[in-house]
Amino acid sequence: MEIIILATPAVVARTAADVIEQQVRRGPTVLGLATGSTPLHTYLELIERHREDGLSFSQTQAFLLDEYVGLPTAHPQSYHSVIRAEFTGKVDFRPGSVHGLNGMADNAEAEASEYESHILAAGGVDIQILGIGTDGHLGFNEPMSSLSSRTRIKTLTHQTRQDNARFFTHVDEVPNHVLTQGLGTIREARHLLLLATGNAKAEAVAAAVEGPVAAICPASALQLHPHVSVLVDEAAASQLAHREYYSDTYGRKPAWQGL
Ligand code: PGA
Image 1 (cartoon, rainbow, N blue to C red):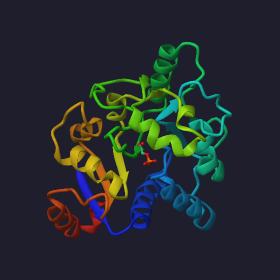
Image 2: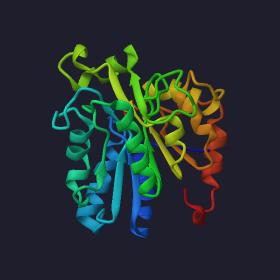
Image 3: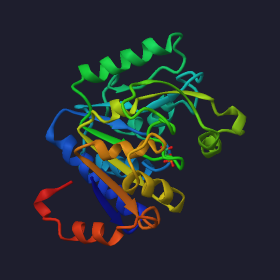
Image 4: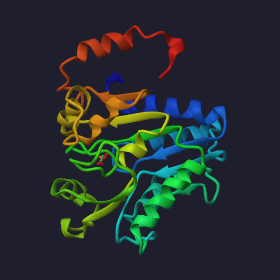
C-alpha cells in the first residue's frame, strides 16, 4: 500500500487523473467508478483532458460501485444518473459501456450475481476509484461487512444516511438499502485508487491504513490488496502516525516507477 500525501484536493485530483489517463491511453480499459463528492474533481480533470487533449474513453468500459435500492434509474440521485451527469455523459463513452446495478430489480440476489458475472466477462476492473465513508465504508460496505463479501444488498448506517442527506431534500428520503460491490469483489480489481480529502475523513483514513485489518473498518480491507494507492490531502492525512515516512518515501520515489 502506497500512501501519498498531497498538498491540496486539486493535486489529489490531478494525480488520480494521471493514473487513469495513462491506463486509458494504453488501450481498452475497464474502470471502476465511485460516486460521491470526493472523485468529482478527478472527473472534472478527466473531462478537461478529453476536451483539451483528446483523451478518449471510446475503448473504456465502466462499472459503478453501488446503487440505492428503490430509486429508478432515471431518478436524479440514482448513481446511474449521477455518474452520467458528473462524468460519463460529458466524455465519449460508447452507449452501453457504463454499467450499474439496478436498484429496482425484483430479485436483488440475481441482480448482484449477474453484475459479478458481467464484471468478470469484461475481464475484471483495471483501476477502481474509491472514496471512503466517515464510518470507514468502502463502496457501501458498512462496518462489519465481511472482508470477502460479494455484491449484495446492504442496509445503510444512520451516519451514512446523514452524510448523504445533502443530496436529498430530507434525510428520510435517503434510501435505507443499497446494492454494493462487496469487499471481495473490490479487492479483485487490479489497482485500487483510494481518494480522501478534508478533515472529516482523517479518522477513517488512519483507521483504514494504520489500524488493524478488521470488519469494523471495511476500508482496512485495502491492506489485503497488492496494489493500492491512497491519495490524500494534508487534512485527510492529519491523523496518520507515520506521515513523515510516507512523504519521505514518495519524495524519493524513482520517476520511472509510476503509481
Ligand atoms: P464522499 O463519499 O466522497 O461524498 O465523501 C465517500 C463515500 O461515502 O464513500
